[in-house]
Length: 221
Image (cartoon, rainbow, N blue to C red; front, side):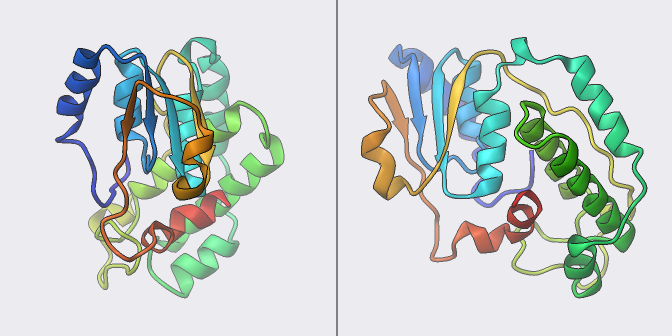
């Protein structure tokens, strides 16, 4: 899971127990972020609707909430990731913006991100593999970035992890169905239907999460 402001790692066991004890079978996560809580509800057997305004969050929700692991051909996913991992780097927007003009990634990793993102857009757009591959790319990029977590600034000295080569891996998937929705919770909440349990965790401060995680938003745009 990517480094994220307000991560619910410690709360997940408590929330999962609450979901299970309540007897709920459907759940709504209205500000889903990385989908950590939505994943927990899904893993507990719930049909979950995950909502957020961010594109990267929608990608995560399409991967971990909407995708049913039982319907995925893992051999196909592995083959696609092996092919993407083998691509040579090619400098593009990410390299120029996040490596040369700033220091979010080492240039050699920025070039890899550019080449892989272009290949996903070219070969996998609008396919069931697209969100899985984009999630894999974001997780790989997160493992080699040079930030303290949020992306409003980068570290002045390169983080040790930034020297490692970008390496895509198959993200763990969950069996069962769900729904991913991108939209403003304040305007679409009433249109989503009824749920046994709703989890609402709005942003902590005045900063929009687009600015906190603008690199991820740019990569998946």
